[in-house]
Length: 370
Image 1 (tube, rainbow, N blue to C red):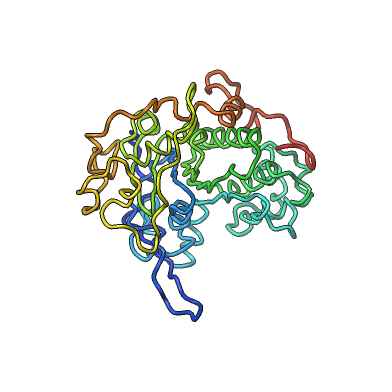
Image 2: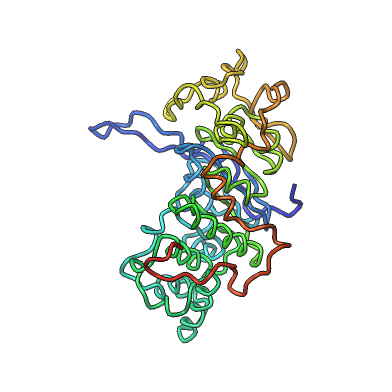
């Protein structure tokens, strides 16, 4: 476990979204995030994983205070973001950036690449206007694009190239923390690997703290130092990536890993039952209606995260569960994952770092895959 001081601390975060009927009357609330506490050490990579709708994207926006929590606190470098004035928060946002999932929607089609990347420079007064073009060229080079790309428009680029532009824009302010909300899920498999390799280079070279929001366990295992698993608005397991993949302690984590084909075996059947409503989650453990190990205690008492500071799970039975089936191989098989992993580079010791921050060939606009 990292001994670095936490750069980002989430304490008891809650965010419920009201549900209204056709007449506008409140009929309940979606419990998107329901009491989440996490600490992200500086220089580490934390992955937040879970099915669609589990609350992981909402948690990322709460961490950057893009939306306000109903309860709980967010501290960045020891400073409570909720106590900051709008002006102070705007200044602090120079240190915190978000990479969105959709590279086609995250860039303004009315702005050239130069204007899009230079906007944070102007907002925070980072460089004089006379130096903007030079700084934009440096940022584009770092993500594997050429200076002449700055004069073009977003529609002239492929999805992978647009995501590189979005990454350059996120880096423009010199952030300490970057949150990537499914940053490669909208891209082709080969392009995913190129962008992930680029992000790894940037994390290493710039000393970034990175939070990866993803449902792709192959990407998570390749990139993350630590993993937090979310289910129905809560963290159900959190620990070092190696430990979570090798010996998952929560039945939901085990089911996620088993659902990915392994070498020599097919994927396990889908988890039985439907995901309970986030408007009215079940009492006790929220996973118990779908858990094959559930006992009476699970239906009555909501478990807390327990098991030690390094590797915790919210499960009453975590010390009594049988060993997981081939957990170490859970994300190594399957045609899609084999294709993805075949594009990942070997470890850093076998690579010669490139001057631009990526070892890929320079991409070409319009028609290139990345």
